[in-house]
Image 1 (cartoon, rainbow, N blue to C red):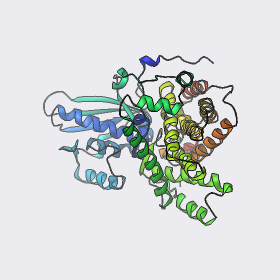
Image 2 (spheres, rainbow, N blue to C red):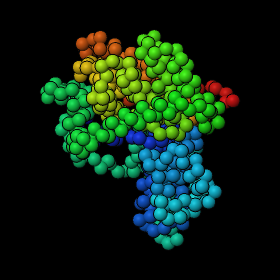
Image 3 (tube, helix red, strand yellow):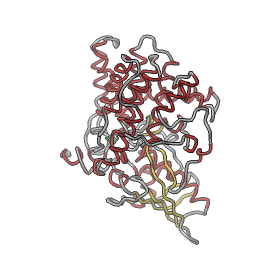
Image 4 (cartoon, protein in one colour):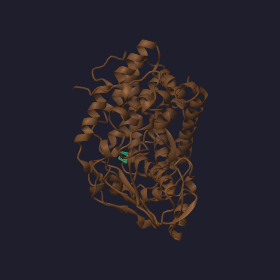
Length: 459
Ligand code: SF4
C-alpha cells in the first residue's frame, strides 16, 4: 500500500487541548461542535449590530441524526453564550426550556433576540459538498445585508469556518511529525519516548506546569465521569427507553469480591466504559477522547491501569494520556476522527488504538511496542460502521465502548509480548482506515439510514 506523504512543516500541529476537551454529551460533532459554532457566530453577528432574526440550517449527518444528538439545543445554548465546557449539564434542560418558553435568546449572553426552536432547520437529505457535518448560520438586521457564515463540525468537537485554515498553522513545535514513522524516527534520533516528544511539543504553547495541570484535569474528569455513571440509574433520554446498567453492574461487582480479583478484570473494565458512556448518552460531563461517542474507552483503560496495576503512578497516568494523544494526532491529521466521515472505526476504533498505545507506554513499553499496540487496536476495528438507532448515541455506542476498552487492553499485552517488530505499520492501518471510510456508503456513517438503525424496531 502506498502511504500518503505529508510535509510536517506545512501542516498545523495539534495540541492535547485540541484532542481532549471537557464538555458535555452526547456527541462531539453533533452537540459540542455545533455549540461552539453557534457561540462563535453569536459574537460575530453582534459585531455587525443587533439581529432581528437568527437561523441555523443543519445539513448532512447533522440533519439526519441531529435530533437524537440534541443539536438544536446545542445551537440555542451556543447562541446564548454557553460553551460545552462552561455550561453545567444539570442546567441544560432548564436553560433550553426557558428559551423555548420565552421565544428569545440572550445572544452571546448580552442581547435579547427573537429565537424559536423552528429557527434551527434540519435539512434532511441535503448535504453540502464541503463536509458531512455542515451548518449555515444567518443573522438578519433591520438595515443592511444579512450576515451568513458556514461552519463545519470536523470531528471531536472541532469546528472550522468554511474556507478558513486553522490559526495554529504557522506555529512550529520541537518535534514535528505527521506519520508514525516520523514519530518513531524522532524518538530514535533524540532518545525520547513518545510521551516525552508530546511534552516537548506542548511547550510551544504553555509552561510544563500548565500542561501538567491540564492533563491532570482531564484524568480527573474521566475518573469522575466513571464514578457518576456508576451511581446513576434510570432511563436514558431520547425515547429509546434504554435503561442505564452501570449502577446495577457496579453493585453486583462490589458484592462479588475484591476488585483486584483477576477473574473479574474485564467485567470491571466493561463497567468503567459503560458508566462513562452512559453519562455521555445522558448529556453529562464527559471528556471528548477523541470523540464523545467513544468517550468511555480511554477512561476505562486508564482506570484499569490505576486500579489493577500495582505499580501504577500518577506519572504513569500522564504518560498514558500524552502517548494516547500522539496517536490521536496521527488519525486526526492523516485521516479523520469523525463518525460521519469514517464510520465508527474513526471513533471507537481510534479510541481503542489510542488507549492501547497509552497503556503500553504506562507499562513501560518501548516506542516500537507502543506503535505496534496502536496498530493492533485499529486493525481489528477496520470497517466498523456507525449506525446508531434513532440517531441516539446509545445503541450500539455504549456497549461498543466496552468492546473498545477490552480490545485495547488485549492489543497492549499482545504488543508487549513482542519486540515491536510487526508486519502492518500504524501508518498503513491509518491509511487503510481512511480509504475504508471514504469507500463506506454514506448510510453507514452517522446517518441512521442503515445497519442497526433500520433493522431494529423501536419500542
Ligand atoms: S456508532 Fe460509533 S461512531 Fe456512531 S455514534 Fe456510536 S460511537 Fe459514535
